[in-house]
Image (cartoon, rainbow, N blue to C red):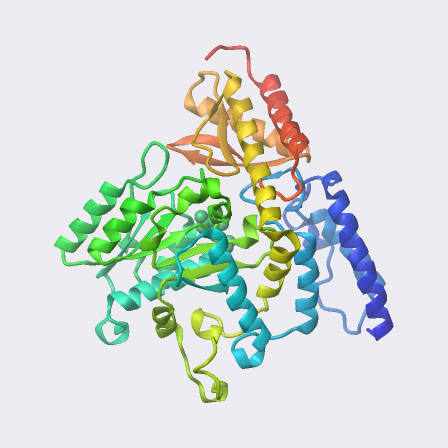
Length: 473
Ligand SMILES: *Cc1c(COP(=O)(O)O)cnc(C)c1O
């Protein structure tokens, strides 16, 4: 590709993305494709000689786009949001253009220093304790793995390899904890049977007294409790584990406290939601995802630690070829996590924080919270429906309930969800809470407005109306 062609297509692609932002709401949120359908349209081998960009772009539009699920659709109510935003996309263009490897200060000084600065901005925006230091990870899964590895090292006095630790160290997380905790427990070598599932209360939050009992029992059996994972905004229902009592238990037993705020953490920029962080002073580490609900393209996970020294001691390496004369004065983020090569992720975050400003971001989140409360109100005021969990953030878990048996309710609610999703106008997902099938309505896409939330509710009502008889509750 020559210079002129790059320019021409570069402009065309920016126009295409601008149009996409404007018109994505007209596309079906979820594509109507079956497994293998896209693959069948693609050649078995890479082309021998170069093809021209017009053909490649055309295939993108004809083959790829119709097979995409549109996460930036205003009718996106599935899972959790994974927002981008215009300033974030523009920054990604610059990042890709520079193609820098940001593994150590010397390989990209501005990237290292900007990362330090934007992490400090985020720390202040969320009101996290002074002294907590941040690093950008690819995902919350990776950050939680880093926490479990550091907790493992600390619990064994950084002598894992000499002393061994298998079947002695234990980890605690509520039954509602994200599956990335299970994965990290496996990868970090604790062994999955060392993961204790702490029971939850009626609001699906961890019961601290049960946590304490389990830690005591394990200690009496000669085990070494190493880490507690508390969640602010669980995946099923966005429940909030109470950090004050959990932190107190961790402190008394000398156990690492990792806080997974992957989804809910963004709401900490709002004074009125800051209560979720009550007790966070006790946390040894915390992760939240700007790539979910802070308008920053995937991937961008903010990982904060109380003592960077422990993190660095867990991960540091000093190969001769990476030694520089300034190592004592700078942050070399290769030692703050698993990977060596690192993308320049701080740039898009910097663009987003500056372009929106803290007030601008607060307005976006406040509107999502308001819309979720509206939706909750509609569900509550219709006697055929019920809200299934407290609404702390943008997520409303609800279900149709006309008093039928549980398995019949599951069938009806599944069918309601399928019909809404098949409309292409909205996308909802499901979960199970206390053994009951629920529909999850997660409000948080950047461009979602009241009319989209209302449309989703009307689709639910239509589906329910045509499915169920008039049987009273
Ligand atoms: C989304 C989410 C995760 C996983 O996040 P990734 O960045 O995709 O790894 C973990 N925990 C919670 C609570 C989440 O909401």
